[in-house]
Image (tube, rainbow, N blue to C red):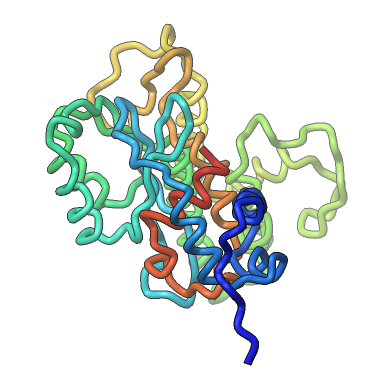
Amino acid sequence: IYRKQKCDDTTTVINILNDLKPYTATHSSAAKKYDVAVSTVIDIFDKYVQIPIKNLTKILCWDEFYFNRHVKKKYPFMIMDFKKKYIIDIIESRWKEDLYNYFFSIPLSECNNVKYIIINMYKNYELLCNIFFKNTTICIDPFHVMKKVNDSLNTFRKRIMRTYQNEKKDSREYRLLKSCYCLILKNKDDLKNDDYKYDHILNAHVAESYITERILKINPYLNEAYKIKEEYISLNDETPETLKGRAEKEILNSFIWIEGRRLSNGPMKEKTTILKKLSVMQMGYKTLKELETNSYIRKTYMKNIL
């Protein structure tokens, strides 16, 4: 039986390490190219690639990313530096027990140096901040606030639409609420005012802004909810000079500017997009734990996306 031998050639080791640099590279592809065992490629990688754990910085972004629908822990947790936009660490999941164990291992002095943490509205993140980061200001990411506002507006729209379900399904009001609701979720400034298209519900050539007005006239409370949504969008356009007298609340804390940039988890989106593209199942790993978060992901993935 033919058995692939271990690799002792320095040139081959260097070539294997170079071939593993792209985040799409796999151990198996390198092993096949150089006719060595996959375990040999893994041993080479673990031996020569060492990226130390980074310390927590003054401004942190916290978020999760979707990993795999077939595993129990579908959402790993990621910590990122806001200013320099590099990943500090990735934890196996966003579950409370996993995050508690992780933050217990970090020195208290390091946690106390963190000034701001930007989170989404996942309740466990706020609990963790209050327990481990007592000197930190919690900021809700503006993107998630906007999503919450739109979700609430859409829920209210559905409630109004259901009042027409029994006897008025053929009514123009029901059809507008059902088929054109996406217009009230758009920013008012993004609605097309001059592009007239034929609308089968209104039986006329109309612009998006006109259809939106007709929807909002269906119910005065829906109109008020829409105004609140637009007021928050206007608030997002504020600057440090125009936004005065804000209260110390987590959502309003996102209106803090650091070196000309408003606090948000925006810098994380590019990194999570790269992570989502990684074809983990092709490498023979089914869970994040099998990927050895502290070595494989930190070494392989993070060296490409720091």
